[in-house]
Amino acid sequence: ILYSRLINHLNQKVKGVVERIVEQTLLYDFYGELLTPHQRKIYEDVVFNDMSLSEIAEEQGIKTGCSRPYQEGINTLEGYESKLHLIEKFMDTKAKVTKIDELVDSYIASPDMKLILEIKDLSNEIIEDY
Image (cartoon, rainbow, N blue to C red; front, side, top):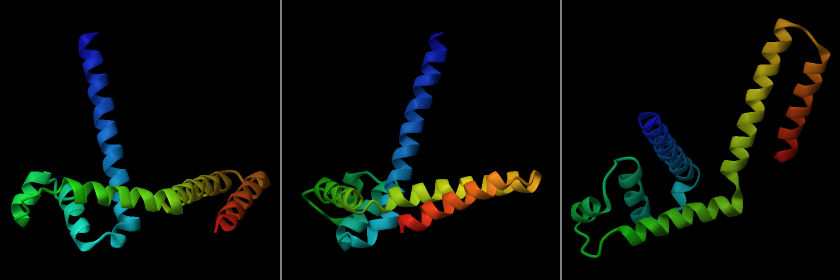
């Protein structure tokens, strides 16, 4: 039982880490160009190059550390998403397109006009969102 709990705990931790990495990557993909070059470099080194803030400070010869510009970069990216919701809209649209793809496969297997109407509804939702 203890082993099972440990495995479950580790799985939850890994899942949380993976979700955070995906979130950081999406934030950067959508809004990274809006960071200052300094913030962008630090963010890239932490998120994509797996460097610690102390390693980055040492590499760049920064005496005061990098935690402030890194945190400001995170706050900036999250602020853009909270105002613009581009990632949220992207994920919603992706889910709808995935559902449309599944409905098309179902229609091919068994032509049913209800499936076409559902596809039409989903496509209209996407069009209305933009």
